[in-house]
Length: 101
Image 1 (cartoon, one colour):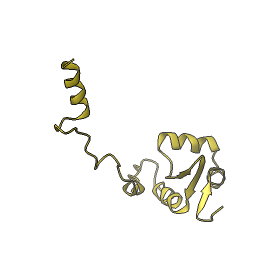
Image 2 (cartoon, helix red, strand yellow):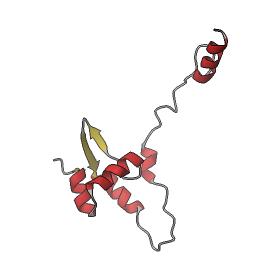
Image 3 (cartoon, rainbow, N blue to C red):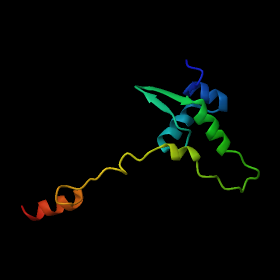
Image 4 (cartoon, rainbow, N blue to C red):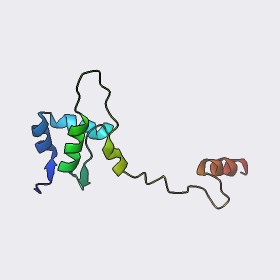
C-alpha cells in the first residue's frame, strides 16, 4: 500500500473506530474525503490530517468549523446548463410537453 494513503481498516485502527463507522460516515458524507477505485476505498493522509485538524476543540460548546476540504470539491453540475434550445429548464420542458399532448 502506498504510504500516502490508508485503507479503511488502517484508518479505523488509527482512530480506534469500527470499520462500519467509517462506512456510515462515507454514506452520510460526514467523514474525511476518500478515493474510490473500483471497490477499493483509500484515505489520503493529507485529507485525514485536515479532518483531524478540524476536529480540534478547546471546550465542548465550541462550534465545529466548516470543513476546509470542501473547497477542494467542485460541483460538477454548477457549470452545466440544463436548459433546452428554447431556454426552458428540463422541468418546464416536461410541463410544456404534457400540455401539448
